[in-house]
Amino acid sequence: ACLAAVDAADALNAVSAKTPQKAREMAAAADARLSAEGEGAPSLCGIPLGIKDLFCTEGVASQAASNILEGFRPPYESTVTARLWERGAVMVGKLNMDEFAMGSSNETSCYGPAVNPWRAKGSNRDLTPGGSSGGSASAVAAELCLGATGTDTGGSIRQPAAFTGIVGVKPTYGRCSRFGIVAFASSLDQAGPMAKTVRDAAIMLEGMAGFDPKDSTSADLAVPDFEAALTGDIRGKTIGIPKEYRMEGMPAEIDALWDRGAQMLRDAGAKTVEISLPHTKYALPAYYVIAPAEASSNLARYDGVRFGHRAKLGAGDAIVDLYEKSRAEGFGPEVQRRVMIGAYVLSAGYYDAYYLRAQKVRTLIKRDFEQAFETVDAILTPATPSAAFGIGEMADADPVAMYLNDVFTVTVNLAGLPGAAVPTGVDSSGLPLGLQIIGKPWGEAEMLDIAYALE
Ligand code: GLN
Image (tube, rainbow, N blue to C red; front, side):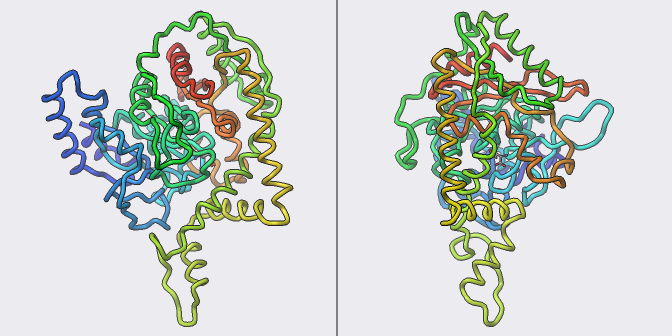
């Protein structure tokens, strides 16, 4: 049914590579396993999943939605996807995304934008599913698969989840292995599940998480039974409402949704208290220094020699022309912008003023959260400052306008915390809106239980 749905949904442009043959083989193997093992079969056995194009999948096109990785078929599998396949999950295809996960609308993709299956009441305008995991969000919302992997460096799981009315979970940094995931900003990147319900996301996260010696930042901690943690009983919990997130110019509908979410948690027995995260306003500028800095370093490997696109050289061209032309042809404008910003803030004359300063701000933001978690169990915020916007509406504007989409999500990555976006309502035009629960480090089980009460 999922393969048929994938074929019927070409207009969404959510799938970057269809893998029907692989899906059938994996489904047959899962079937055999279910008959042999019955109830003992793993919880993901036979479950059709989509995989963001950022994950290396052995022998299957993995391009990070970039022309520079044209024709790249990895000779190995990412740890996260390998774990999913060990548990019997079935790959229905690779999913569209922003190029190298840089973007908030899936419009920087070399495959063109993915489309949100939702439309505003009475309008036939195509909306963005958000980004960078836009294909994953669109595919899950349109039921092309039951869940999808995403990655989140500054909000790329949570913002698209909110734009498409699904659940998206960014785990604690180090919970899921980054091995085999194309690197964007290594100190911020985390993989996580995108699914229709909190329960599905909990089951999927358990399948993805766990220690991996191939990623030196992966944590050697036991993975809790996240599904068993969903009790719906949050009596006695204290939820913080950070006053700095009540931004000026925020639409009244987002404000109202936030209040409604707080009321839902109180109705479920929790207490809500106002808290302060004083350095919030510096999070976006710090993120947009640190993330491009790490990206410029990570993307240095795309030189036209080792893999991917190689420019044709003219007579008299030297090796440096090969690098320059391959990169100029292979990287799109947003990626080039990030590489230039990154190289600039890391350069000898500006390192102290920008990069080092941003790292200090990062520490202050982390401390804000540490202090808050001395008195609260979790934090409730909006997931996005608006509902889904139209394709083309923001892309042609100032790039900073697009960056502002991440205002509620980047703090979580800077502090390495877990965060979950949960669909909690619709706006006046019927479009989905989401709230975010931020958990303590390694507190995904508790965070998911609170998200469950909000669902
Ligand atoms: N929108 C943010 C950016 O463009 C976050 C992307 C992400 O989380 N991968 O950097």
